[in-house]
Length: 159
Image (tube, rainbow, N blue to C red; front, side, top):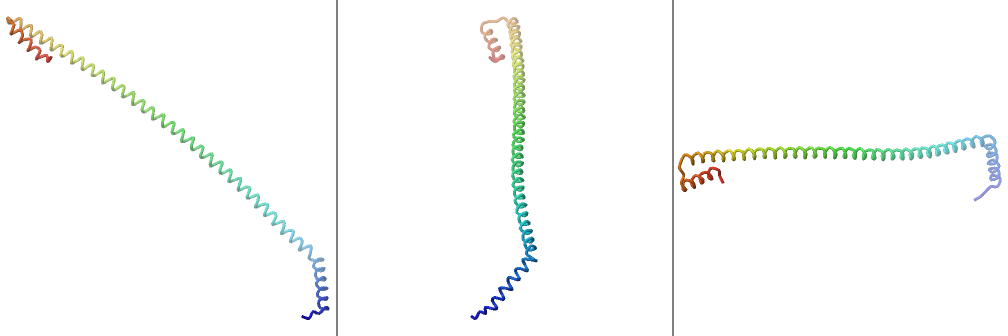
């Protein structure tokens, strides 16, 4: 490898002249472009951070709204459940009252029928007693006949 010093020296001089020309005429423009690009990148990073923060805030807000909706749904469900239980209890109470009323009416009807039957039995007993008395008075009664009439009376009354 043969290195020529004069070529090397001329290359270095040319390089420094080129750097001086670039520095004199283009360096400020290149610096401005680089600075502009750096500012753009910084702005985009700041905007990305702001957007990320907004997204986080929206997420938190949406979570609060969702939780609020869930709570409201639970409240509505509980209110409806309480109302349904109240209506259910009213229906049960009404049914119990109606059943008691029916039972009372049935007891009253049974009592009336019982009284009517007792009245009929008494009436028949009286009629039979009157009939027996009439027969007893119509005939002269001896002891055997008397026993037979009483036996017939008991048979007819059903005692």
